[in-house]
Length: 268
Length: 256
Ligand SMILES: Nc1ncnc2c1ncn2[C@@H]1O[C@H](COP(=O)(O)OP(=O)(O)OP(=O)(O)O)[C@@H](O)[C@H]1O
Ligand SMILES: [Mg+2]
View 1 (tube, rainbow over the protein chains, first blue to last red):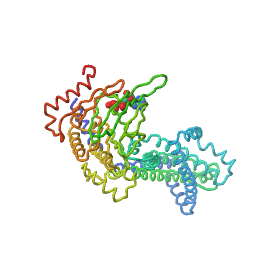
View 2 (spheres, chains in turn yellow, cyan):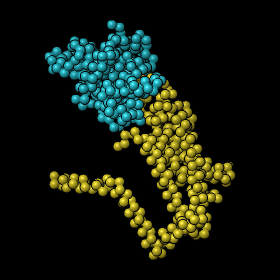
View 3 (cartoon, rainbow over the protein chains, first blue to last red):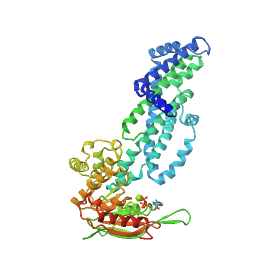
View 4 (cartoon, helix red, strand yellow):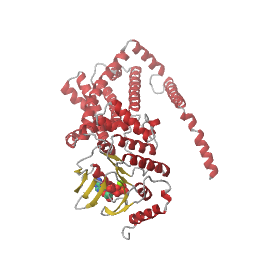
């Protein structure tokens, strides 16, 4: 018994040494990606699944980068996401605070939020197109809705979950309601808000691409939809990879932002 | 001496669903003199925190009232400093910013705020950690920061709810001595709740013993030991007699 224990202990103490170094994890990540691409290459050069090879996709990416289509598509998609997302967050945070702070506001707003939350934002697109036309407005509106609904709940949860003792601590130091709001509620709910922002950005990105598939004259989703008509698989792949990479970058940015803004949090 | 805090027939009843109600505190009458250090002991749930929160203005009594300087308490105020068991430091603020919090609320100018904060941070021995975030502090350091924060707004009354409950024995004794030293220098009125009979006797000029179900005052044990209290006193026969007396009335209220 004791012999196996020590053996396990020594294993446990040597195993994390590679993983505990950040470079070690990164190396594993890179190796995994390289292996994945190699597998993709192996499968497609055999012509097994009728998909383009990595080389064909890379070639198509270079062509699109050179003729500028890739950039203009990415810019169009990002532009929609950011306008809708910024609007959504800008409205969600004050509304979330209102809901958390005032019972009446919560009573009025919550049923709507809970109801619309159960409808996937994409399901709003047909209605948005019929009522708002086919220009930018319906797309931005749908993204606004997606990011608003995910952030408003997070903000509201943040306010509701603020530690009561912190509020009392502020009150006994002389803080009035306004000071408590500004100096306790806002900073204390920031970690929750950042979770909402992250989820909101994710759902905005997912929504914009889908919206472009349905009705758009530009954007990564639109490009894919066009390519679909011509069985242009490399272009579809280029767009898909661009969507993935951009989504990943945005998520990383939000995580970094979150980590710096809420560095005070005790993380387990 | 004048009466600083006066509990007058203070009752707190909690009502539950249906017709159930619960007397957390029943007709508490207690006068605390200006500059006095009293400790409150009693079994869990006997209403110690409830009584203190009513004096702090964080809880409203169901009936009766608490007078501070002969004025009924209507809400919290910076002249009554509160130190919570859970430290309640603002985790997003550094030690110095925590200590400056009340001064900022009171709109003290920046330089003065800093001067006052640094003085109290020094008093509790946290100078080297003034710019540290609470998450990097030990439990004892957090509690010292909370004490500095309460002192900084210069309250005439300190209400302390088991402030040293979560600390190890050594840190606890050190903070007790530190607390007594500042109390002797500035003579604030202190109401100090504790579970620890030893601590209750060591700190207080009077120990208030409460009983549960319903929460009520059971007995007041005067501690006729001179200040400054020393570690030797803890070993004296007088001290152990007092401790036994408090102990018996806490744990065997019926036979005491
Ligand atoms: N918000 C509340 N709702 C209902 N009952 C409450 C509430 N707060 C306190 N009580 C009850 O009042 C009684 C006294 O509580 P209080 O916190 O004052 O006890 P205490 O003496 O401080 O106990 P402890 O030593 O465990 O801290 C307890 O029985 C508790 O269940
Ligand atoms: Mg208590």
